[in-house]
Amino acid sequence: MTKPILYGADYSVYVRIARMALEEKGVDYELVPLDIFAAEGVPTWYLEHHPFGRIPAFEHDGFRLFETSAIAHYADEAFDGPALQPKDPRGRARMNQIIGMLDAYAYRSMVWDVAVERLEKEAPDEALIAGGLSQAGTALQTLSSLKASGPWLLGDQLTLADLHAAPITGYFVKVAEGQSLLARFADIEDWYARVAERVSFAKTDKAD
Image 1: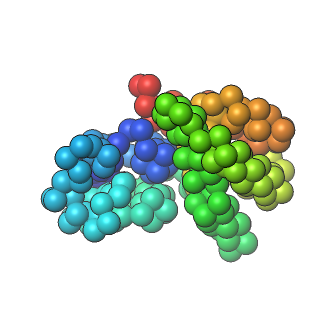
Image 2: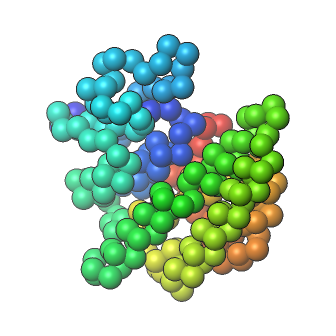
């Protein structure tokens, strides 16, 4: 069996989500660097792995996947290690609801509209940041309302929902506005502090 390959950049939130899933399963994988924002553009060969030129993409023994959630689910189900999905249908539905909510409503506002705008633009669009913070507040409030009692988002079991939310939150709190907003939701702030201590989170930090 060949070593799984993950294509993508270490700065990518979605690449980090897939990497965290592989790390939590104890999978020895290869990260092939791919910068889709490079001046020369997306390499032609990569379009065979991802026809839309996004990251990440994944390959294991000739089996190819793209879309982060599909990769993370495959990692959980194809490899040994602790289960990252609840056994019961309602638990899995809640996990997938959280992941879908984060993709649809949290990622763009928290990462691009707030963190990237503040960190990378010489003249940040303050109106865009304000709108992003408003949407981020709704997303965090929703996450708080969906969070079960216990250390993780679904209770006592670390799941793919935690691994999806952690990199998005981690990028958001790179800026002061993100830290301040997160602090308004004590349960989510505590959860983030806990998940940020995971080895999988530390090993996939771009600073490393």
